[in-house]
Image (cartoon, rainbow, N blue to C red):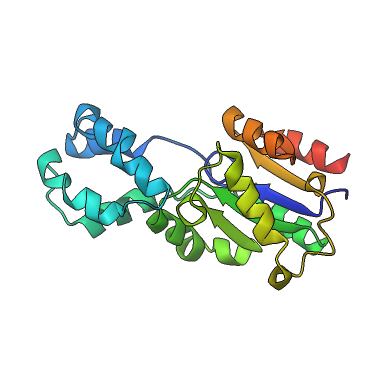
Length: 205
C-alpha cells in the first residue's frame, strides 16, 4: 500500500452520526435549541480548541437551561448518547494495522469527549494514537492542525521518521469538505468519506 499513515475522522467516519444531543435535550428534557444554541456556537467552540473547560462552562448555564442533574451526569448522558462506533470501520482499521499501516484518529473534540473516546470507546487500543483538536490547539479546517500532526508523526519517539519521507504518504479521511480542503492545502492525500465500500476501493488502488 502506498500510504504509510492514515488519519481517520471520528463523527461520520469511525463513529456513526445520529441525532444531535441538543435535540435529545429538547425531546427528553424540554430544553429548547433556542436556549442552547448560543452556548454551542459560542464558548463551546473555545472548548474545542482547548481554550476553555467544558465542565466549567456548562456549570454556568445548565441551571438556566432547566437541567436538574449535575454537570457530570449531563456529560455522561451526552457522550453515551453519541457512542455509536462503526464496527465495520473498526475491523478495517485492525486489518490495516496488521498490514503495517499506522492508523490515527484526527478529530475536532473538546478534552472530555476526547478522553471518553480514548478510554471508554477504547480508541487508545484501536489506533496508534489520537490527535484531538483540544490537545493540538487547532481545528482541522486550519492547515496548522495538520502541520502539528505531521510534526509529531515525524518525531523520533514515534519511530516513523524512516517511513514518512513526504506528506503524500499520509492519507486523511473525513466527511467534511472544509477539513479535506485544509489537509490538501497542507499537502496530504485525502478522501472525502461517503461510505466504507468507496473507501475500500481507494485503499485497494
